[in-house]
Image 1 (cartoon, chains in turn yellow, blue):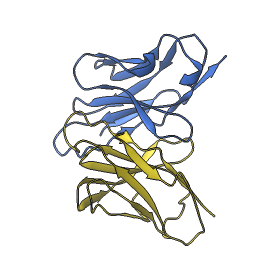
Image 2 (spheres, each protein chain N blue to C red):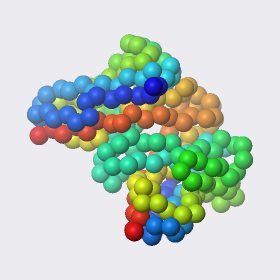
Image 3 (cartoon, rainbow over the protein chains, first blue to last red):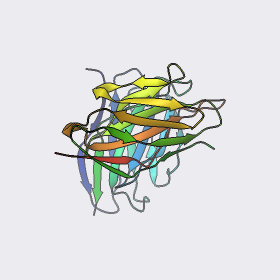
Length: 115
Length: 116
């Protein structure tokens, strides 16, 4: 089955701890994205990567970090510098970051709760 | 600047009646447009997409949308609502032009409630 997997589905952490969210895709997509979703709001872009070993900040990158060492993997670390980390995190991928079509395929999400 | 406006934050229909979710966009170039659906605590699923071919686009689960350039609209419709359609719906723009990085622009979402 081709698709995007995110783990874990639910994650609980104490304030002040860093936490890493996993995202893996076997779609052979070049581009990958991380979004944050808060209740009643749309999706906000945290980071994106158009190619291995390269990534760019999105609209709300402060307090987050990423790496893209392999094409199929794009982990997101929520650091202790993130002021309000409790949210639903969605990973997505697309065949290419350029061109007209542009549809992205989403993973099932990770709900992070920090207390 | 590109933007997307979903005109209703919440829509309520009875099962078996038509669904209309409204979306207006603003784009300097001819965009690609999408509708995604999200069920509670799930990821987003692509319902349909417009990429400059036919202006009436058919998607999954009986949904369709019509691209109207003169009105800058891309409204989502379904002739007969089913209880399983209750979810959050997002209208999304993929701007096209030089420097396009693949970033999507999301509307704020419309919650569809289906009453028995």
